[in-house]
Image (cartoon, rainbow, N blue to C red):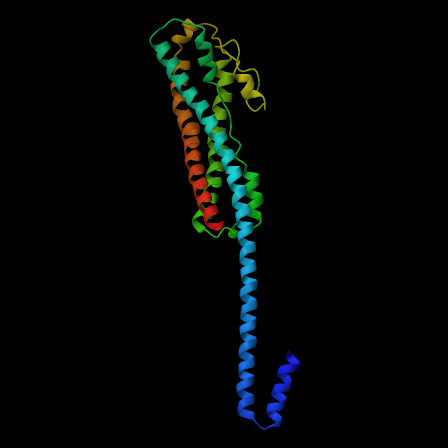
Length: 256
């Protein structure tokens, strides 16, 4: 093809048809430029499709991970809602001077519930190391970053603070007032299952009803439970729901 065009140019020059040669040369240049632009467009299109495929894969991974976080947090929220109800029930029962019954053992045990959600920060670290700029929707990208940033603060700081309160209570409150506290340590992987069958029996219920230190502890615990656990869990649930909705919407757009 190049030889063909060269022969045409040479023929025009040999015939002293310089003006036609010039027009032809310019036309040839234009055709070359158009060819280059088409090639670039095809290359850019291929690159765009490649980037979008990577973006879809990344968003699918985030979706799976955050959905797992959501299910876990939702489960813990229900458990701590039960704890809140148990505290309310015990305070009301004791302040009204009601008699002891066996069901109270379960309520006492429930007040010691302590489960720490494990948000999969490793997935975020791994995916973000590949370059979060692959995510083309800036609002979605910022929401994902905000979600993981909040989760780290909430669960590494607030719930750990609540864990310290409960550990201190196990030494200074529960041990002198109850016959048994838990059966395993709270970070034991089998702790949640074992706790379901555990009870806490007060050594002397009549004294416990009038125990100002214990009653004050329960009242304080109700507030601490809200600020350090239930509120962060509720916020995490709301944030994960929002992020999942944004991811689903973006995936629908990208897959069109």
